[in-house]
Amino acid sequence: MPEKGNALTLQAFNLEFHYKVLPYLLSAMETPAPKYNRKPDWLKIKLPKGENYLKVKGILEEQGLHTICVSGKCPNLGECWSAGTATFMILGDICTRSCKFCATATGKPLLPDANEPLKIASSVKELNLKHVVLTSVDRDDLPDGGATHWAATIRAIRNECPGVTIETLIPDFQGKTELLDLVIAEKPEIISHNLETVRRLTPEVRSAAKYERSLGVLWHIAASGITAKSGLMLGLGEKEAEVLETMDDLRKVNCSVLTLGQYLQPSLEHLKVVEYITPEQFEKYRQAGLDKGFRHVESRPLVRSSYHAEKHIPQNR
Image (tube, rainbow, N blue to C red):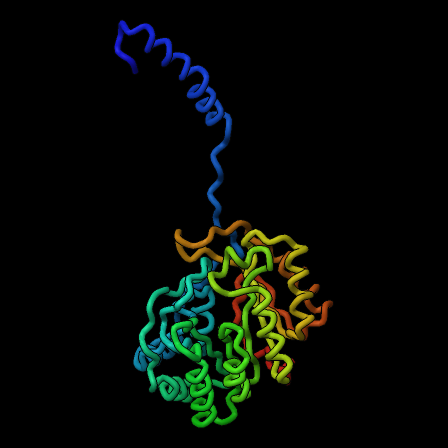
């Protein structure tokens, strides 16, 4: 506020207030405050409990192993661990990429633990698992992207636990087919690589991955004769037509298993949820995927890549 007696300054202040400040205040009064974007009831998560949950937790802690269940803040942790299952995350818990949807820590990873493959195999045996899901952080710092470690882990499980089926949820290995072939050579029942989102949103959502490169990875997997699987997060602002287009792109590269789930914001630093997709819309997408030729489609709000993964093996249709 200008000092009293300074008529010129007072007049300037009144003009400034009348033409700039007052319209802003009136506009703010007329515009309703945005509603808080609360999670709908269908996204309520059960708290983890039970003897099996404690057993899984204890074994993982004893072996010093990581899971995407914890690092990725998976909403199904309680259900899966209580059922005696977990998705093992190899090659540490620090990722070299910084995707804006992912809760996994980003930074400079430690060197791979040479004993990790045997630790994983020992845990699989102790948990008496029939189906195992393996995933990893991206290790762009390693010359082979961690592919050799991947192969060693699969071999260790095969040797220690004959008859166990394996799904591998792999990174893109920067699209290098010779690295993909190291995993393919171990013949896991399913090799999964997630597109995560539609083409338009990929640059915003995924820090280094490319939409076309990921499709190429899936094409190479399917061409090897191994079941190719992928997954999408919904609620990031994609349109229905874009989801259906992405399904078409996946079918063109012979991807036969698809998972669709609701994106949930891990922290304030991550991408915000644009929309909560209804269970009815998820069911609509499930049916659309089946109509397009996918052999199996998991499509519900809390679905994640490894949710009910044992159902995705071809002989368990």
